[in-house]
Length: 282
Figure 1 (cartoon, rainbow, N blue to C red):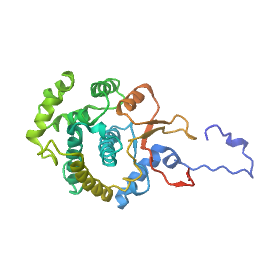
Figure 2: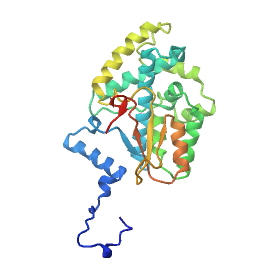
Figure 3: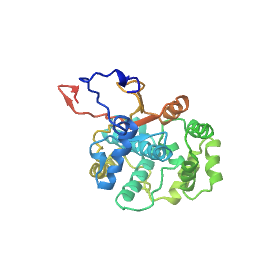
Figure 4: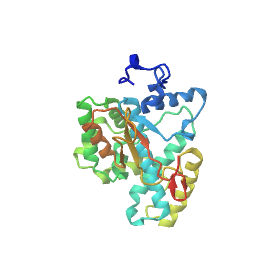
């Protein structure tokens, strides 16, 4: 609209322009205003795929937790579908996923209860990415003042099974000692399946079905999320699909933030869309 020469407009010409229209036409403005509907007791998760402005620290921290939780649920779905059982040849990953979901369901069902973030050690166990690079990229972005991550780091450190901050910092330096982590979990956490490490696939599948059924009742977007944990990154001020990128890795997202100066939104990609005759529809 800045390119319009208003002095040249003819009397019969009409321009569709409203003051502060960016509050609706920009992705960041639309998302922020929709989120304010919570004060009207409207849950936008019922009609708007989860979306975050990653240039805002609080939004970025919420996205990081959402990404990790969605990853956990994706792994549980994949295991339940038996599409790739070899991926879970160790019970460590699936036990950690079940513990996280058990904790999260209890939190979601108890309003105003303090939330415990997924810790770095838990993420190292369930993630299929290089967790050392993950921590390094976070620290680089903090040094570059891309986003203030100091609070996020403190939250993860303070929630790390009672370990000191120094122990948490050394965790990644020591090449992620999974054995020590597993011992700490056995001592300090109530795992749904930890009492019998030799549980069969069928035993796990029974527990999974129970948890997934509970998640269906809690999450309006459970069925559209799929099991690939794909997110779509969009420049806030561009249109017609310019500059968008689909990603499924947290490290990939952190690298993308580091290399780009534009304001970006990240939104959950609808992996299971409504199709009509095999085609997407608007």
